[in-house]
Image (cartoon, rainbow, N blue to C red):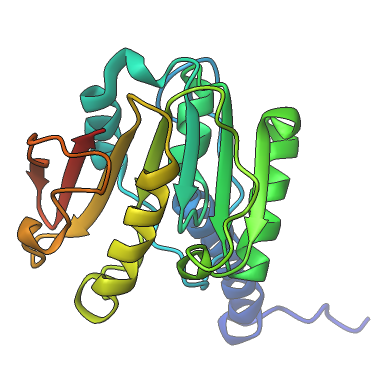
Length: 225
């Protein structure tokens, strides 16, 4: 009788490593996928494209954002610029916003936004606008003017140091057409001085300064129009 061959440690090791690697990758992807932290959809996960250019906002920063906004989110129109995973826009919809417009130029990330809107049952309240949002001042897309806007501006932080003039032109263009009582919410890194952002916006000559709140390395800047 030929004795059965015993598996040596060396022979079985690659199989165990492969399973461990697959599990580790799945856990990493799940951990990187942002979740909604408040409202009707609390706890639901958003589609995420690992390895892409997206920098998801930390939960604690997003929580501070919506604490600052309070009840004005309900029934508002949300414009989520540089949307990425759409965490801000979908969070607002979960908390009662009427509609959200998501602007995203990265094709795979825009596909994730569409998948999230389907998975969350928000297709009829979501509009995904694919393309470079910094080109909007040349040709503005169709937006809704029925309710006040909440405009979220959370670009790659490097833009505040290399493309701040383009960001400010975009803000000025949006503010010029925004409904009364709208708000701007800008998330920057703590290396950008708030003085780099405009104070006055054409017809909106409010003397109210930007309300800046720091949660290093992020800083939130909010302005009422």
